[in-house]
Amino acid sequence: MALVRPFVFQVVGYQNSGKTTLSESMIKILKEAGCRVASIKHHGHGGKPDVLEQKDSARHLAAGAEAVLVEGAGRLLIHSEKDEWTLEEQLTLLSAFKPDLILIEGHKHAAYPKILLLRNEEDERLLHELKNILAAAYWQSKPDTDYPAFPIQHSEIAENLAELIMGHLD
Image (tube, rainbow, N blue to C red; front, top):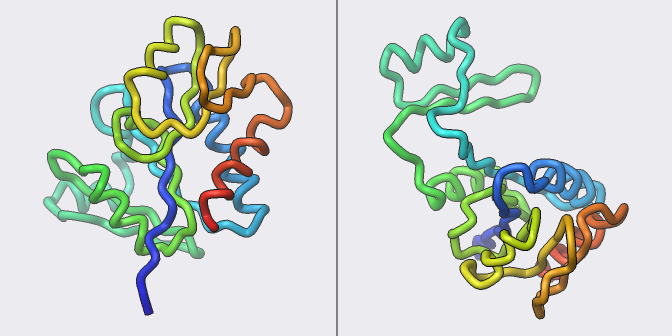
């Protein structure tokens, strides 16, 4: 039996462009449509993501464990410390959960198919800088582009983009 790699796509844009809100909505819609979705959230705020210092898992990390899994009632948390986790390493790890799709929020310069969020006309330069754009979602005026472009305030934006992504599963 051949191992089928999940379809990987990105939701990208500058800070405060609506990436997390759109990603959350798309994950809900894709799940309701029967897709198994995993996600990677790029922590672009500098430094390491927070770990609850008082928890035993943080103590295991502080003691030098390479990785710590915490499981309870079906929820699994993974903590690991190293200099850097490449995007490919993160994708390999998530592939173990056998998702149909992996949504990457951020990592805008990665080569995966992406939905680009544009806050303003200044952001439109990303239309020329980034590769593998599937569609754009915009806050202000519609960009001059050949890519499908949707107003972000439109009530069905997440449905439209989820449908576009599901079209790549066939």
